[in-house]
Image (cartoon, rainbow, N blue to C red; front, side, top):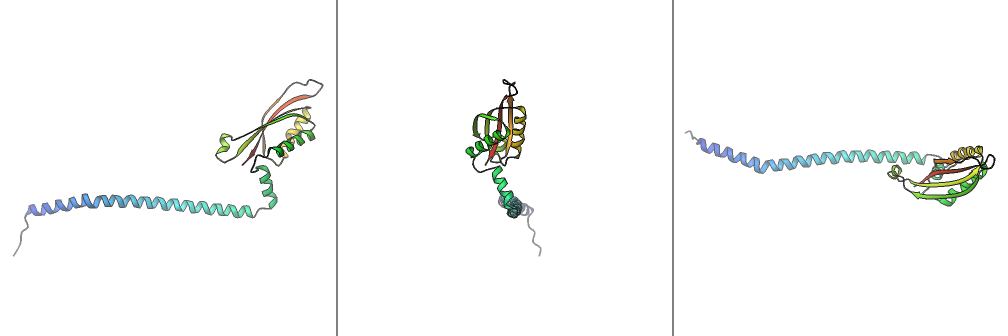
Amino acid sequence: MKQNIPLGAVGALLAISMLVIVFLLWPNFQTFSALRNQLQERELELKNLEAYFNQLKQLQEEIASQPAEKLTLIEQSLPDEPSLPSLYEVLSQTASHSGLALRSINSFVGVAAPEAEQGFRTIEVAMEMEGTYEALKEFLMSTRTLPRLLSIKDLKFDSPERGGIFKFSVTLQAYSY
């Protein structure tokens, strides 16, 4: 005996199964797909962080293997604090040893825009000095050999008033963390 299932019943069952798939299973599939994508993103992020921390560990080992003199030089070049008294002392001694008479020294501690991202603070030092042109050249050359990281921002001088004595205005930038 053959049983015939009416075509309408087959169509209704097919329609009901399509509705179940569309309204019950499809949202769950979408959620599953979104979670799978999040998992892949997090795994990639974890992999990148592991690589970053491995690189930091290698740098730490490399720094630890360096001689203490190099680390001391770096600390002197970029001190943790602006340390204005020691900076003034070094600059005034350098000016004196170069043959310049220091008339005034002023400073401003701030943060320069490009260095701000890296955490460097800038110390702008304005110096007024008198002396010969050769003494100025010697001073500028001497600033390059100082342990403190310095850069010349501005240099102005007037015509000599007495013989070969010039008035110089030098603006330097020093850096600290």
